[in-house]
Image (cartoon, rainbow, N blue to C red):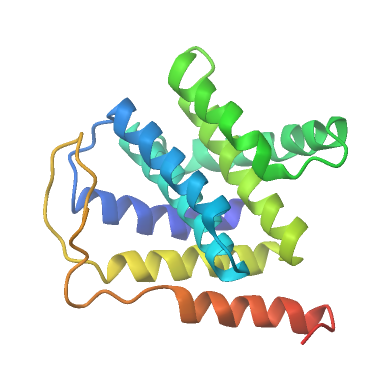
Length: 196
């Protein structure tokens, strides 16, 4: 997952424009859980892909707030890619998304486990869910995260406290939802599978 550096820089810049570099555990956990629940509320594929991207975006923001370097992020993403695959092998038939809450809880309740470990596992699980459900390649997944970044970059910019959700209820007049870009990515995946 070493191609994620550009996306991490974008997420870091977005967060730096809105927050001081300080992790608020309660807000971080609440944001992860909110996006996780959005996945299951999604009625169509584009809503689910949006939620998977948002979970990963939040996880990358948590890494930035925790001072995780790009090098460390890439190393841990690669390390956890193998561990997540092994876990999925043990849980035959279980979709990757169902393991996400375990890592959210580890992040909240077991600080010895490590912030980067939890976030790297969550990001990998979201990627594997997109591959499982929609036959996405890593290139497709990177396009999803880029679409999420572009959408978030269209939101208004103003600083908030570490315990406040940025842009809550006020995305601003220039906000552009990622829906059209995500539909295009999904259509490409479906066409590659011969389903479009």
